[in-house]
Amino acid sequence: MRRWLDWVFLILAFLALIVQIIVATLPGLSDLVRFIPLAVLLACTLYFLIVRVLPSSLPLRHRADDLVTVRPAAVYRYLANRYGIGYAQLRVELTIAPDGSGMVRRTVDVDAYSEIGRLDTFLVIPETPPPGQTWEPELLAIRSLTPGWNAGMERSRAEGGMQSVVLTIAPKLAPGDHVTYVVDQRLPAGLYAVDLTADQMSRRKQTFDYFGWAINRPTRSFSLLVYFPVGYKPESYDFSVWYASSAPGIPSELTQYEEQKSLKRPSLLGPEGGRYCLALEVDTPMLGLIYDLRWEPISKPPQAEVE
Image (tube, rainbow, N blue to C red; front, side, top):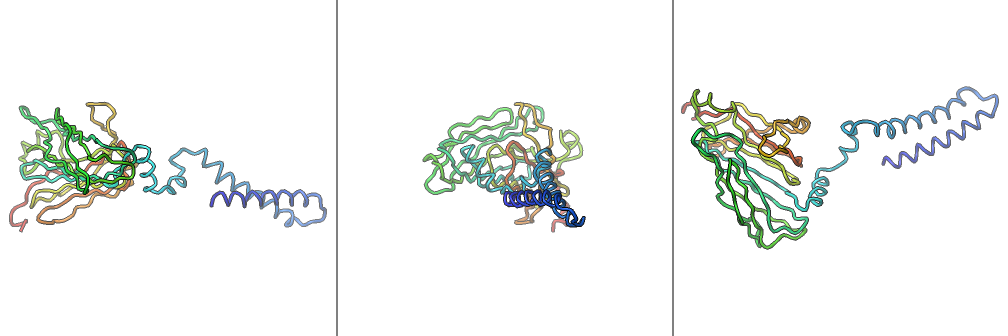
C-alpha cells in the first residue's frame, strides 16, 4: 500500500511540475490557475517529507507504523527458526501448601526447528534461607504428554538454591516435530509466608512474596499461575517485568517499564476447590526478561469469614 501511494504522488509531482513550467510561459492566466499546479507540487513534496524522510530520522521507538504491522505469530516463528527451537506454549504453575512449601509444574509445548535430543532447564530460589537451613529445589518427575516420545532426566545438579537439569527427548525431534513435556519440582517448607507472626515477618528479606520466570527461548504464549492454599486469599497483588541478570551470581534489579506497561494486570481467579489463583498471561514474551507475580504474605481469615 505504501509503495503504491509513493508512485501516485511521484507521478502527480512530475505532472504538476510540467504543468507549472507550461503555465509560467503563458501570459494572461488567472492567479487561481497558476496556483493549482503549484499547490499539487507542494502537497506531493510534503507527502514525501512527512511520510518518507522524517520517520527515518526519528528514534526507533517513534517508528510505530513499522512495529504494529508485525504480527506476534510471525515474530515467534522467525525467532524460533533462527534459534532452532521455540515454545508454542509455556505454562508455569506454583501451588503453595499451608507450610509455605510449593510445587512447581511447567508444561512446555516444544516446536522443533532443528534436531533436538536434549534440553537444559533450571529453577532458582533467589531468597537466602534462615541460618542453619538450606533451600534446594527437589526434582519430582519429568514426563512426555505426546504419544511416541519419551522425556526423562539425563543429569541433575542442585547447589546454592539452584537446580539445573538436562533432560532427554527420545526419539530425537526433527524439524517440524512437536512435543509436550512436564517437569514437576518441589520447593522447601517455609519459603513462602503463610500465617507468619509479626516477629517472623520482620526477619524476612522482602515484605512481599513473589514467583517469577525467565524467558530464555522464543515463546509464543506464556502463562504464570500461583495457586494459594485452600481458604487463603491474597488481599494485595501485582506483577513486574525485569531484565534477566547478565552477571552470574548478581540478581537483576533493572525493571523493563515498557514491557510492563504493555501488559494487563494479573487476574485473581476462583475460588475453585477452595483455592484462589493469581494468573498472568503474556502473548509473545520477550527473550531475556523475567516476569513475576507478587503478593502480600497471606493469612487465613477467621473461620466465620471463610464460611
